[in-house]
Structures are given as C-alpha cells and as structure tokens.
Image (cartoon, rainbow, N blue to C red; front, side):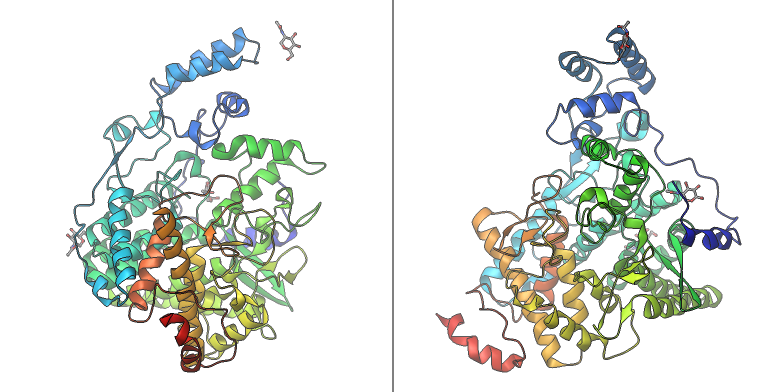
Length: 581
Ligand SMILES: *[C@@H]1O[C@H](CO)[C@@H](O)[C@H](O)[C@H]1NC(C)=O
Ligand SMILES: *[C@@H]1O[C@H](CO)[C@@H](O)[C@H](O)[C@H]1NC(C)=O
Ligand SMILES: *[C@@H]1O[C@H](CO)[C@@H](O)[C@H](O)[C@H]1NC(C)=O
C-alpha cells in the first residue's frame, strides 16, 4: 500500500523509544481460516448463506492432512472443483459449526439481584428480570479440545467462560463486552466478569493486542479499546486491588498497541498533533465475509483491491462496519467501495483512549506508582489539547472526525461526535449544554424511537435509520453529566424513548435485537447479514438505563415528540393525561 504523506513523520517518530516490543508473528497465518486456495474456493462457491459459517467449522483432521488432500483434489480438477466434490470434501474434513462451544450457566447467576428493586414500573421490572435470565442463554465455555488441538479450530482458546452477543456471534467480541460487563455487574455476576477480563488480558499477553473477536481470522484487527474501562468497572464494584495490581502491566501493553500500531500525526496551523485512528495494514478479503469482499474488489473500476480490503478491515476494527463515516473516497461517497477508514481521525476512538489514559493514571496512583501515574496524566493532557485543536468545532458545539486527506472535519451528524462527554474528556463545563444545542440543531430530538446512527441512508447498518444501544448510552450518559435540569431532562427522555422501543419489540417478539430501526421502532436491518437476536450489548444498556432511571421510566403509552425548549416539569405536566389514558 502507498505510504501517505502524513505517515512519514510518524514513522520517524515511532522509530524512537519503542524497541521494547517483542517480535510477534504476523497475525493469522492459517492456510485454511485466513488465506489460501481452500478458503478461496469454498467461499467463492457460496455453499452457505453466510460466509462466516465455513470459517467457524473445526477440522476433523490435522491441517496438513486437510491441505494435502485439498491439493490433490484441485490438481485432479485442474483448480475448478465441482460443487458436489467440494461439499463432499467439507463433509469429510470439517465439523458442523458450534461444536467446540458448550452452553454454560454462569455459576454466579442469582435469582433476584438488588437493582431490580429500583424499578418502579411493574411491567418494566418483570421485563428486567427476563433480561437478567438471558445471561444464562448467552453463556459459553470451550471444550478442552480447543486447548489440546488449537490448530483444528478457528476459535481462539479462552480459559474462562464468557457471555457472547448472540445470533451468528457465538464467540466473544471486544467492544461489545464492555456493555455486556456493565449489565453483568448489575446482575452481581462479578466472577463471570473477572473471567472475561482475564480472557482479554491473556489475549494481550499472547498477541500484543485484543482481536476484534475470539477467532483467528479476527487477529489482524482490533476493536474500540475499552479494556481499561472494563477493568475500572470491575474494580469499582469489587475493590479487588490485587487483581488490578496483577494486571496493570498488561493493560499498559494493550494501550501500547494503539500507540505503536494506530497513531497518526496531524499537522494543523503549524503545530503537529498526535492522535489515533483505525488502521489495518493487511490486505486480502475478510475471511468471514470473503465472497462479498472479493466481489466488491472485482467490481472496482480503478484502485487497488488490497488497499480496499485493508480499509474494510479498518472499518470492521472501528466497530462501525459499515458506515458513511468511512465511505468518503472515490468514486462516489456512500458506496462501500469508497471506504477509506484510515484517513479519518475518529472522535470516539480518541475519546476512549483519553479516558483510558485517565483511568491508568488513577490506577497507578492507587498502586503507589507516581511516575507511571504522571506519564499517563501527561498523555491525557496532550491528547485533550490535540482533540481540542483538531476535532472540536466551537461553532457547532461538538467534536467531528477529521479527514487527513482533505484537512477538513466531517460535519455530518453521528452520536460518536459526543463521545468526549461520555468519556469525561472535555475541559469546558459548558460543553454538555452546547451538545444539547447541537442535538437540537441537528433535529435529533424529533426521533421518538431512539437516536439515529446518522442522518444518511446508505443501506449500511451503521447509518440511518438504525439505532444501536451503545450509541444511545454514549449520548444519554454524556448529557446526564450536565448540571442543567433541562439537559438532564432530555437525557432521561432519550432513555425513556429507547427503553420503550426495546420493551415494545420484546412484548411482540420475546427477543432483544442487536439494533433497531428508529424510523418505526422495529428490529433493524441493512448491511451484510440478517438482524441478530440475543443480544449482549442491547441487554446491557437496557439494564443500565433501568437501573439509573428506574424510579422514572414507564412502560406505558409512548410520549409524543419531544417538545423542544420546554422545561421537564412543564413537559410532564403537559403530557400527564396521555400516561393516564
Ligand atoms: C487447466 O485449466 C487451464 C485454464 O484454467 C487451461 O489453460 C489448461 O489447459 C487446463 N489443463 C488441463 C490439463 O486441462
Ligand atoms: C480478586 O482477584 C484474584 C485474582 O487476581 C482472585 O484470586 C480473587 O478471588 C479475587 N477476589 C475477589 C473478592 O473476587
Ligand atoms: C503492530 O506493529 C508491530 C511492529 O510494527 C508488528 O510487528 C505487529 O504485527 C503489529 N500488530 C498488528 C496486529 O498489526
């Protein structure tokens, strides 16, 4: 891939002082699950409705034997194996999906966690109890074979059981797990949480970073970095300082990955700022979406397929796969083939890291290491200054992704633009109320089923009209930091809207979904696969909102549109009759 101009000073910069990293093997060398002709032939034959199915199958024989047998087959058919023969080959050498994972009922699951008592509305309380039950359905542990024969599985072995998102996502996912863990802590399942944290820490020790999810084909990319925050939530609930002490170096190692592998330098107004971006320096189609990526590249009029694939992987790393946020290149914005994730300096990524730096500083202080505490404090100060200079827009009252290629901010609406509030990464106390005005100016408060992911309808799943639970959380808890009753009232109203959407769909379908369509309050759609049930982070966010606003939330009639500029008390008075009807 071409080295772009903004990368040059950075390469020099990173040459300094980072020699301590041990050499790690290139992520994912499997000739079955990551690259090679076998993967190519099977995925391009489209034997299954979802490409993920094949790469989730485990082997019935050693990889060398499978590859040799495949080589004989391709030679016999001159590299064009008939479908029937390919199917027979897979039946012989692969196991059906899902066999390496066992259902697991968390041992620390209990009948009636305390937080349920905080929920006043009886229907919502009964629903919260059912959400709490779902943890038992989403628990998984690995069979010992995954440890004894790792080469036969795409699944990466984890010692401790964990909670999965659900649906097609039968392994754990990195950023999803943060909201899952928030929910588990409300359910008082601290042992499960510690096991999940330990799994992530083990991955950092083995691979130097946390992959997008728990499969070898996810190793080339990470996911939004929330491990330090997960640790903070666990420590806040348990005060288990010895666990923190044991693992603080590993947390630091994970943040080093973002510094070494994902930093970018921005030159603006004669100053140079260091920030982070999503960036995956590996080509090749994503193994779990192989045929789609291959076809997208085949339809390219111009441009390099390897660069396209690397940008798709970077989009997956962002967690927003895919979104108009990244579809900014040629030939036309909003087309998936125009994806250029790595040219954006994302607000949310930098806010997550800013928060992690603050948490590391306070962890080290607690452990008595003032030098390290000062180091992370310094990193945070630098990052806040860089975010202020590069991402903040005083006129709009929000932060925006910065486009390295054209030197401009992307002024489209995305909930991620307010992540610094949620992450506590702002210094102007008025920023929260500016954010309210920003939401009003963008007409976001007129959507009664939830906050949209963007205002662009591209057919991608991280765009209008989908609403996602973690993005509701980013905005709601950001606004709730205001001291103004009006801003806090809007935060509550947004929580009420989202809870009502989740509750109403649950009442109809007895299921929780990974995303919702905020134009009609139904399960979401769009993107690369069917909408999934489960669902880890949706349940986590619902439990958080039910816990925080339990004394005010209602299951009753949906409120009419938010009435802008009215005080909370006045709004309630105004709308009271509709509650009672
Ligand atoms: C194998 O296929 C290639 C084209 O894909 C063809 O040129 C070649 O002649 C074939 N060889 C045999 C032995 O059929
Ligand atoms: C704290 O973590 C340690 C592992 O570091 C574990 O052995 C211990 O049981 C944990 N304590 C509590 C109270 O959970
Ligand atoms: C991170 O960077 C190091 C040093 O360049 C490299 O060896 C390693 O493969 C990279 N890791 C990933 C996951 O990209």
